[in-house]
Image (cartoon, rainbow over all chains, first blue to last red; front, side, top):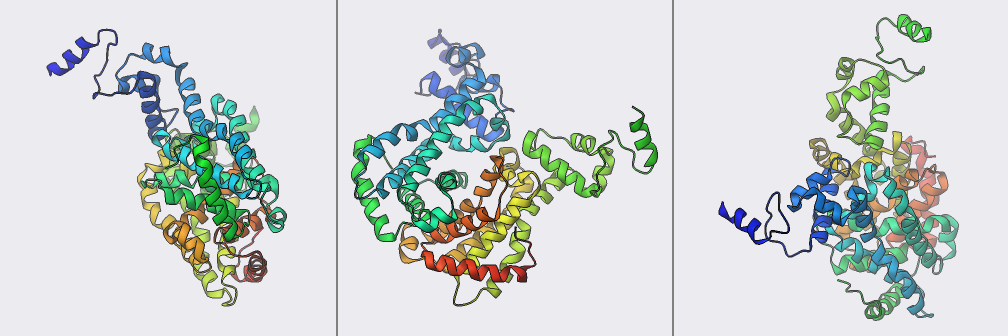
Length: 236
Length: 236
């Protein structure tokens, strides 16, 4: 088809190995998107930079212009899944009204559901893949993950009731809460869209795990709602 | 080393490609154990029946005597991670005292934590691996997984309070509870042993997700304790 030749001719600076359907995304974002799809569906180890470049429709060399190879792309994808939540933790803790401390955990859960619900191709799944977990990149990603888990643990500890502290143990609480929020990954894997009702249900579940009473959960939900605009986050 | 030759000579009926440290396990169990380790750590797609046979120290043909290849082994490993829990659901529902319906969900969680905590090499991880999820075997395994999720949903629905039904939605409840119990996989991934206190904390968390009050959780824990011997389960 002559369309291919034309497409090539109109973009002399970016020779395309395989022309791709018109895309408005910047090449860097396009690489991330395609890599996310391949890593998640085919596996990290089983995907080569060549596979990614071919599917984007650029030369392998161009890919290396944007990223330090596969590890560089993986590092950025992992960051995408945690950084937007992590960046808001300090603000959430600052802005949370003192009389409704439960709002902080509720809001962190809302924000984190949003992050996991909107990352391309459900990349939260990468955490669970053995070839990702055994990579050096994942090792370097640990502090960020631990920081987020610690934030959940801290906000949970602030509202938890006695029996929970006794049965769960505060060092486990962060992990339990992160695990509850990661139900988003399961929902997306099942093919469903993550809606606002899911986000609210998951945030309420986090407070229930801390044995917060239902009337306090309702207060927390209302207070969190008021704080959303301060975060500059577009919570679905 | 002559040890190798001797080892081979003393077992003429089972030629060993690579002699292995003395093992009391039956060959079938040994194959399952080695396959679990390789699937989880190296990946399902990246492991061949040859790798498994070599590591067990048997010929590939012997492996096929026990299993219908890699899919057959995967099917059995997946079953191991869900069947022991699923088999006890009916008994749990029958035996649960009518005045403490919360005990049924608590006990299912205890049993399921036990299952996930004792399966070899944390094979619950297999659920999350893309090469496993895209296999036909995983497709065939879906009904068992769905049956277990439905059991959680049903037992949860029996004790849930109004606000949870309103915010979470009963069709999501099973998934939330399964997700909470699967924190076991996370604990094991982190290198920790799953202890009795973890099991109790997770079971209590399941009831909290249903907004069951703390005094009822204590009752459920005590009632579940009494039921354990009836299940013939060795709960750690």
